[in-house]
Length: 180
Image (cartoon, rainbow, N blue to C red; front, side, top):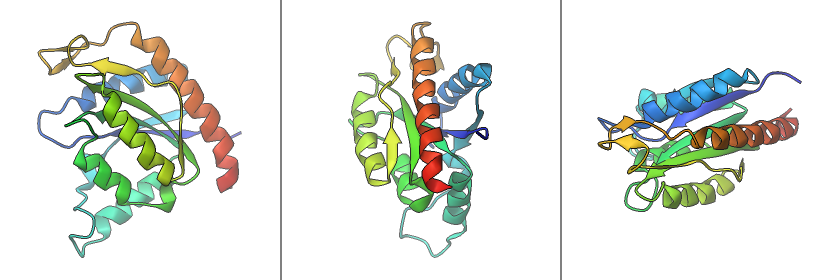
């Protein structure tokens, strides 16, 4: 089987965000495994306009082209007002077929571990034909971040990230056969 390409999607675009810290931590764990190609995919880099509010399709086309190169995803999902960010929802809506028949894991964070954002994300992924995996590392703003801005994850999260990646790779490999 060919090596799988897994995108670690940063789900926030705001100034001062901590998702790059969380994404780099996940990538470090993933790269140490040596079992797939992992890359950070920052939605902020694509400057996606709100869906339907621009005649410039170039950002959405570049976004879709990037997604088409990936076999699976790990979403870094932060919780805002009991849901996912508007930027992540817009990025999800800005492509369609490029999501289909792929797998995804979720690493979430927030005051309640980001669980509400993750649950909303799961419903959206189902509609996009993305199979989300069961293992879900939850990070707390109170215990895994210093002053809410410096990411210092507890060691207990590393086995959960590895278990999630095991599932993402298994499902991504299986679903790739539907796209071939």
